[in-house]
Length: 279
Image 1 (tube, one colour):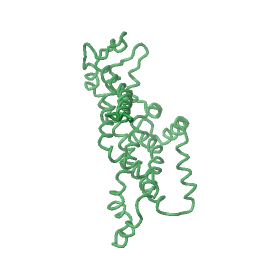
Image 2 (cartoon, one colour):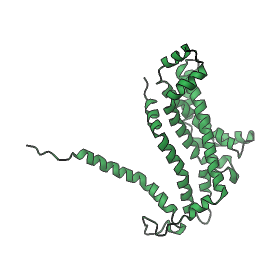
Image 3 (tube, one colour):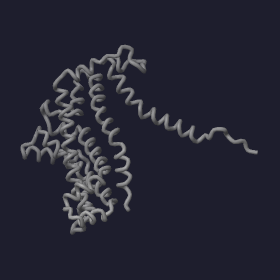
Image 4 (spheres, helix red, strand yellow):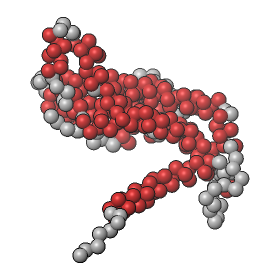
């Protein structure tokens, strides 16, 4: 007779595999946090040490102790928040129309929206720079918001169109029978039903604008208009690099994103899975 294993090997193998993958993912975060509390001269010390022998919060004091970094963080949050609001609002209205109405030119419009995602952002630097200078928006928040929204809006339309298509149209017909107008129906009925898709779209739009460096370099020049990626890059000097301050700023910039992911995780999962299935 075959001898049966007292413990099935599949769960053990799966657990070990997940443990290895978790270690690979978490190691850069561990390195980022531990090196942010090392003195600048010990970051590349050889042989490397897992934990800093003399931890210090000097780098965090430099970040918190200057008003410039506070302005940099506020710039990033304001630009990313405004971009998300514009992209989600306009994207939801456009996506609802494309998912519910048949009109002439709908198919070419859909191909145009998809085609905009195939253009590399670096190819749009000169056109955006010329437009911003022509309209007198250079080195302003509005220049960054318009630029980021132009990239986030097609993504919002694509994501929300597939999500709105999964919502039964009978709900709208019932609302119309009860006397609700189009805008009231969108706000009171469609918005709660589409909330997972809206949150997922908003998170992607926020991160898309929050992490950009390319257009922040080209469309801003003053210190008061810096965003977090640009502020971190400016710590790289010709003679030396303030590594521990760069790492401290990176840690502080990552915390709100982690909190955002944690709060929106439930909506992200349902928003991405339901929006990918056509009923």
